[in-house]
Image 1 (cartoon, one colour):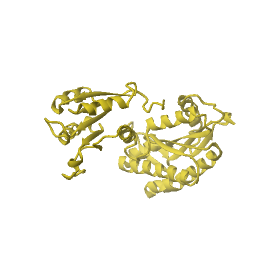
Image 2 (cartoon, one colour):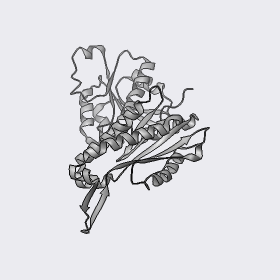
Image 3 (cartoon, one colour):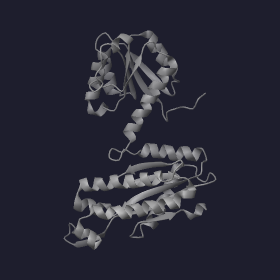
Image 4 (tube, one colour):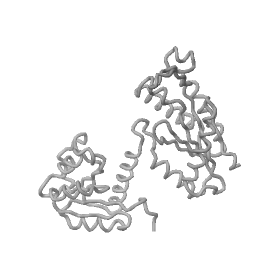
Length: 316
């Protein structure tokens, strides 16, 4: 049997008066993987959908009491359910009507006659797409926490050798406090681009870049190039970041500001601290181990007021 796609049991609702379609959907998944609730009328389903939101909603255009497009619009009009993926089941003749997909609140469609393997793969692709969209950092569009944890654990389970680098911006809060969130977001975007472009400068490697949130990022590269990658990230960041400051702060190489207690404080220009954890020879068993090791390394890196990196030498 193929491995289970989902980390937990998923719930789907199929709105259709077609018993053959219901039988098909219920036969395509192991209930431990994806369980379907079938409802024959669209309007009757609304209370169920809003009280117990499913992971995916499939709406048959053969519903008698309400058009499938209206069901999708009603569901998606509620902000809390806007991310709920909706698939429409259409007949070939439906497509002849012309569809404005900028207006129709659907994420995909299936066309009769239905082929079981295609239905299964399209539904699973829609679920994966929705999961990735929800997980992506809204500012940088980089993979977020769920994807990061999944990637790390997958590499550990495969006993692949890799280096995991946690990147953290130092003195970002003082910059944000003085220059505002808009300028702060520009710095976060710049940092993401620096890391992504640096990793891309190593051709032919398996790599990953993610955005944990705020001013925290990760990248994964082969152990052999980890230190060189850190050097390049530090150099690129230090070269660019001064240009985000006003000229007087840039010349002083610091921010001078008054805190809430009326005391004048000085904050250095932003720096980047990188902690690198190695997994070699199946050393790690759980992603939590990598995170715990990295936290200690980051504290050591932050002792340096300038941009720096610390490698987990215990792995060597």
